[in-house]
Length: 149
Length: 262
Image 1 (cartoon, helix red, strand yellow):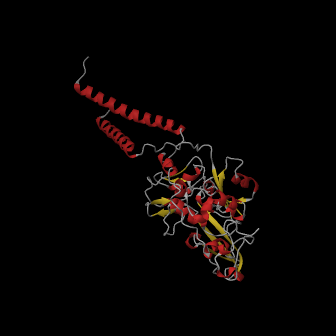
Image 2 (cartoon, one colour):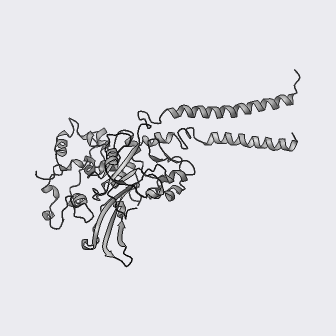
Image 3 (tube, each protein chain N blue to C red):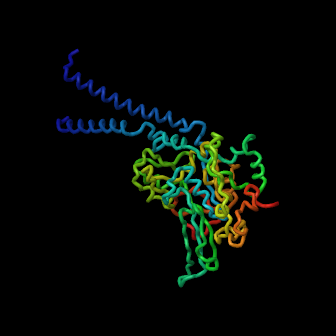
């Protein structure tokens, strides 16, 4: 082989080797494990903290079983506990971590029940100006059992 | 044996370099094939699930509980106008202009978190409705295709995720998403998006928005599971997709979508 070609091939080989070495140092170990991404990131995203525990955790024998059975028997059963009471995972893990009280203002209930033109017609809605005389909704309606049936 | 020192050194160097390069290549191939057999998360086989999401727009009341639950669950910056899920309000006015086109007012004040006020008199409106929006977790996701560093990807169970460690924050994916579902998270300095609460669904919980919805307008389930509600809706209801013509193959299925919604 001619010397100038030899030199060129040597340099090329060195560049390739340098590339492979740098690549192995820079690219994370789990990259390409399952596809063109870092395999460990799936694990990381899975291990993020949960804040909403789910209504099933409220049912426990020594917890809120009584209010739970009242709630599941009535029309608000589609509304999960944490939708009004807020995220409760901390409270589930440690019962002493109390949740703030759910809001009982008219506007809070109105978030769902004020009359709005865009809402489905069959959804129960009230006009706050004519309904309930500015009293708090809970004065007449039990939020866990909203209507006298 | 007659071998010069020069020849010996040369030959030795070649052998060493060749062996190092060879073993690294073989090693990476072997470790990859072993790792591929093990799912990344213990106690959850991602090959067995394929998630899907249904939005029944006829049931949405625009209360915004989903959007705020999402922000609280996923620590999305609360004061910024960025959302992983949000609600849009569509109001079609009665007036028709000269070109016989309807006038449609579309808005989403603060993503609908605080609900919506009626700021157009009811007499002027022909029809009005809410449309919850969320990442479509496309099977053929443009955001994944455009990422230059492999920081966003589709998992085997069909969820599009962002690797916050690896994202360089170039925002190309935010531009690439035809649904506007991605945003730039200034706290993390990376692109961010809905994960369908991957940390919840892999533990058997529902995504925070689905759990928070008081009317059941949002539904989530496994498309591989024939008994799941989502699968049942897919089989029985008439469903539509957002921008199906783009070929992104979304996995959020809508019921009762109007032609104005894109």
